[in-house]
Image (cartoon, rainbow, N blue to C red; front, top):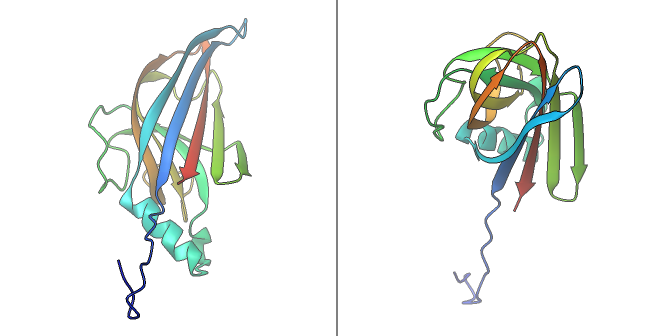
Length: 162
């Protein structure tokens, strides 16, 4: 691409890329039963919220991720998603951190939370609350895990701005 003075301008894309680490542990022994790292989709509504934050929009905590949700639908994620297809459980993100261009969001589900056949997960923010389907969906991915009352679940999302 060239500007008005015919000088070459390098273009650069800013793309959020996410990964999700899923860890299920035996609640009594603490032994790791399964651990998997999966890709996730950063959906359009999440990208729009980040753009709003860049210009200083602060109403409804625009651009801030606050909740992690689990669902039971195996429908593939799409850029146009605004909710999980079948939300089962939702919990406040337990830990947030940033290192350089990588933001990390970790949520811990106890033995009484999120039990069942889990097929999807998502990160929500802006005006999200503890109520299902509220707020802005930032990330969504399919997972294929079963969690019982004998298990704990830790989801650790990393979002890299590349």
